[in-house]
Image 1: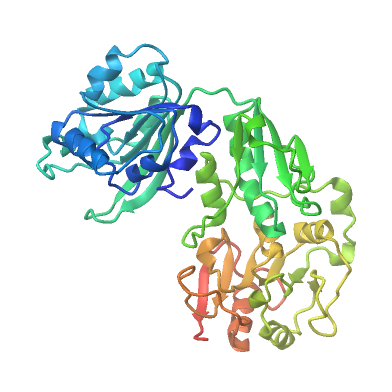
Image 2: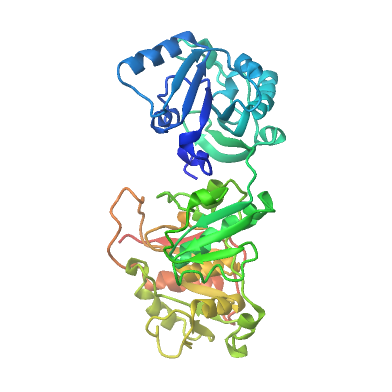
Length: 458
């Protein structure tokens, strides 16, 4: 979830048909509130009890600062009184963006409940957590923080809460922020649309356990490009897999449509971003195999060390991996599971489909390789890893129990994507392998968290 992406909070609703009440609206000049100007609501009613704010808002409108809402009304009113006098279901959506903390706790608790009576579809809150701010700002006495809310308190009122730890860096110490959402829309059908690629589809399965728990009676369909469904087969949370660029699929035919994407964020694991975006608790990716697929792996290829160095993005491939494996060739038991050229003579290299490779990973002792679909398989089956990490960086993946070698710092996406292979000294890769394997090929380092062996300047 991109924390400041307001439009995504209206997923599952037809924005052009919504009547929206914005409590404590301000002058729409914050990173979140300014987005209100660009959302084409049927009607937007903006409420603020500080008269100069509403007058300034009207003045801005006169000077050409316009809303895409078909109808917009701004009023000088106390939000608590306005909501208390409103009829049941008189608005589709109610927003409180950086507002609830500015009223007393008891009044805030009443307002949270009253909004559920007045909003027919959804209530949206963006709020700092566990924070006080004692001084007014800009001559507005209502800017003082009068209440500090916790995730648990908001959940007690029936709101689903997603926390962004230490989001507000301008506080000392930093303060977390949260989206708290109450929904009144029955969800009977869900569309997940993650079309490709193999690794990304597998990572996106992290949302499924939470979705099924949150909407136990909903039918979940997954739209994926043809031949990219390997990670979805046998998944007990998916009711229907839709393959191909089927233009007949309409998101409006579903009560909830989700399109997992990492939004060019590289400082948090993709699985975490997907779960936050879907409004569900974090869960690692999952991969389900049949008994027949598992038992198809030959006995002599079970409990082996799997290696791979083939990726669709050539910049993720590590030419030095072959030399490193030769340095530790005294270790028996390597099996190559990708469809690339042989890494070196003596490594078993069966011809495997992706499902077949996943079955090998199910039995594996250790995965040695690069950031590709096989890494995500290892995560799904909770396997130890020695990872030659490419330019995306380990921060963007959920890779517990991994010993990582990283070639260089790259603050993606501000810089151009590197156009070269991973350059890693052989001795670094060998050292990483030996952190995981004892001389007899047993796992030496089973439950370490992410561990950096060394950064190497490119």
